[in-house]
Length: 453
Image (cartoon, rainbow, N blue to C red):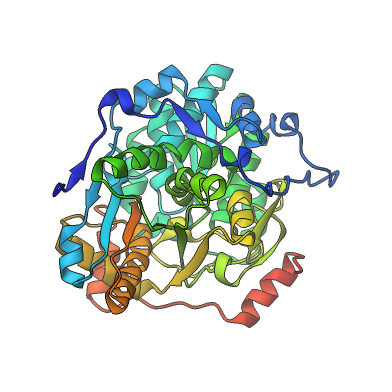
């Protein structure tokens, strides 16, 4: 079938999310209460998270969880997203590999983040929550959450990592257009922010610092809950609509992926695409490879240590079992702001420990080189985060060329880069720096965070 785009009819759009925890042989280690040091119960999370999300977070038994009708109705505005055969990229690489991408950039907010934002805002509305607070790195999650809050009549407060607040003014404007209050983090508006700025007045921010500020605001504001755009199990759950659609679309194409690739910050888009396919590896012994592509400047999967760590810098969150660089880690100011997070989600950590997936790190200039080639061959300018997945895909396709193997590769185009053109300007001008993290620095951050192997 020589077709480029594959679209599901509306009646085949997923009506349930897939919960991989039900099928994992080795379950993720449980989150730990920071005060009692005991495994968390769902009710321990109720003061911060919406109850439905807290329950989903710890659900290890239900393989499929129904998507509420009102969420489905909102999904129908932009789902199903296309599965596309990248013929142009294949030709440019002269590879025998068949390359497909799931195009999550086509929804109104331009990234996959809307899949979980709609669900979390819906649950908040059902619970009577009036305010939601969150963090954002590059701004995709903040934009999606700001829109979701607006359509459900909820006030949104977003702490945006300071360097991204400065680098990506249009993402900030998008959030403000939807009525969100956007604050550069670290700020003087919270105890956590003031402490960080007192110790380091030039701190450019990280997702860990922004999470601390958002959680603190939620804890101290009546009628307010905290929402997160990655890392946690319920966020990954909501994103599985991506992979569930892609399964059916690959059937339409008459192929099954040998390799599934996505960029990796905390795990939302990687899990969303990979987990539905991974269940066939767990249950049926499929030989599919799963590759998470992270930045070389924030290599938690490739150079981090597995252990319990806080999800934020101030230590407000539960302790999560993760591969981590330490919650005090200060990432380089790369343009892929959504990938500048110190740790992985617990599900991904366990899958990596069990050898069910792999990870690679990509240098910043290599990622943009791949993104430019993709733009020139497929006509889509990818987000800096997505460029990492494209770079990993190109590497795999070239390996196929060297080996003379015709493999099928599927990657997630998690978002477009049309509001990231300043990053492309820097790349095209030769101004981007390839930041790497010395082993000694990683060891120092791990020691500061109390992490041991």
